[in-house]
Image 1 (cartoon, rainbow, N blue to C red):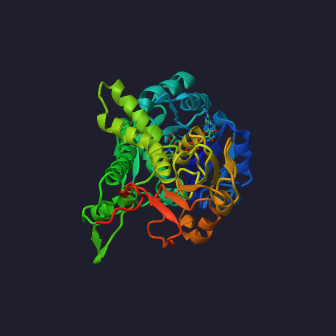
Image 2 (cartoon, rainbow, N blue to C red; image 1 turned 90 degrees about the vertical axis):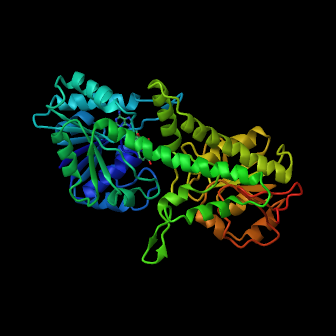
Length: 451
Ligand code: NAD
């Protein structure tokens, strides 16, 4: 099929490159000329394992290209996927990029003689596809829906494993305006062997929010227990959650072995969820619920618990070293999670803000992030921790557990390590390092409670 993907970000580019990889002919559209140029040169504009390889193969075979001209690409294709950003504006979903993209698609459709399907892949609140997007396209192209198709196909990929997730999805959800629209989207995914759920446009939109709301809830649930354990002598959130994971409904047995489903990684304590999806999707859903006359009490609590995490980590640091005024703190990890260079809504940035407000001098290090405006980013963990009064792990990069903490702590002014992700729980640390994990009770004297 000839496909146009509007929005060449994490979702759009991965979608475009993967669909080209499965044999489709794909044009990726973006309003940023440098992004268009980078894609045409085979350079992914962000870090994503495996993306450069499939882009380069698809470009070489002439199955992938990028352009800035939406209408032209739409007129020359069979199906258009909208994958532009839907950020949060004052807690509500901001549809300005999606509306602009839909208008451009509508202009392209007026020059289209054959049947064309418009697929919303961006995460949007229920009703957006069949009201906002349909309305804009109908007004711009002068045709009524059904003479063109409409579908909603939410995306579940995770940054850091986006290509693998896209190529091997758990399920493909296809919300359809009518059967013909849905069948066109199914043809797009002919090469994919996974359950395909055909449903209404609004169910498809809601499924995406239900998925992200569940993940966010599990994180805040775990962090609630972290706070509880920090206040309860003789408890440790890691042990508590490990015990929880052993419930066979969470970790079923397969061939006599205990499995560890991916969902368990959300049942872990840390400094909170971040990224371009969970925080803004929970906010958009809460706003949507209120507009529906529903008070989203659970999701309000999920957000409140998450918003409080960075400050709670700062309290751990203050308990360990006293006032942060004039202190030197190393923050290890900037990305919102390991495996990506995405800083959007990263808890690390909120932690750094808190530290600065408390008068601390902050230096940071991240394996993939070299520069952030307003933050002193060092080239190595050693550089960041040298002379520091404390180091805070804000992203669970596996390499942090492999660092020689005995040597590093010798370079610090005080060998205090706040493990904001419990990333070093399994590492062997010498007694010279004072490691303070999340969710463990410490006595007034700073010793872990021994029962
Ligand atoms: P992104 O910010 O990485 O990319 C969006 C791209 O769209 C940008 O390159 C931007 O320049 C471009 N754009 C904006 N307006 C445009 C227009 N009118 N025409 C053409 N291009 C335009 O966003 P993303 O992370 O890829 O997310 C896209 C959507 O997918 C969002 O709704 C998001 O919630 C959803 N989603 C994201 C992820 C994720 O992990 N990032 C996962 C699932 C779903």
